[in-house]
Image (cartoon, rainbow, N blue to C red; front, side, top):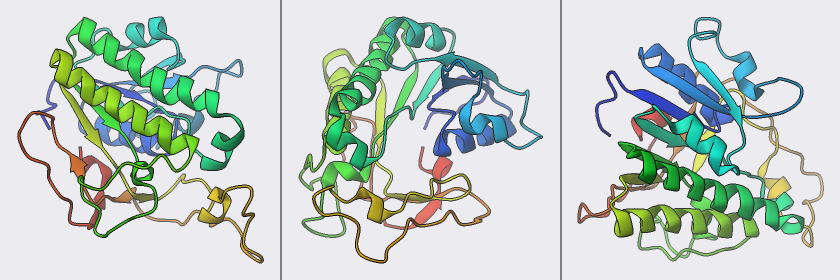
Length: 248
């Protein structure tokens, strides 16, 4: 990724599990960070309320809604790089409320891309998910693996990915797409894999959600990263785990 020294970074979804860790890391690198948090009437900022004491007060919080194009453009104004993590997750919820996934994941990403084009943002990093591949048809998974909308959630992320790539191909918008696989660490949800079964399947008898583990840092397993489009190559990942910011 481009050298971030002296850059102003917007992190969308900063109030979430991964986003809050990313904010902490960027602040500790001495960067100017604007954290986009979902507005609510309680005045709370999700996991940003519990960031490390050495980071508190060292970043700007913008309360808004990724679904609102005006708010997104306002948040992005003056930022050099956008790390776009804001998304509605959880597969089971998407079975009965798919409209909310379209509005947040697809339209929200469109809002970021439109603003980036208008404001001539230097770089947008769009965070996707391994769910776009559905059940693995071969391993290790490469970028040649078919995209399979196995749930409304995964379909919405496929749509968001393709929008991001289309903005590069159509307008030259500098976009990078990353697809994390297994991300774990402090602040992770206690919702386990059993909770992601289709409602018709139910939860396996005797199973329970996986509990968060006291890991010293945020880790992910990512089998590949979508490189900056147009560079003429599709990198394959190693499957090794590592720090999230090492993948950006």
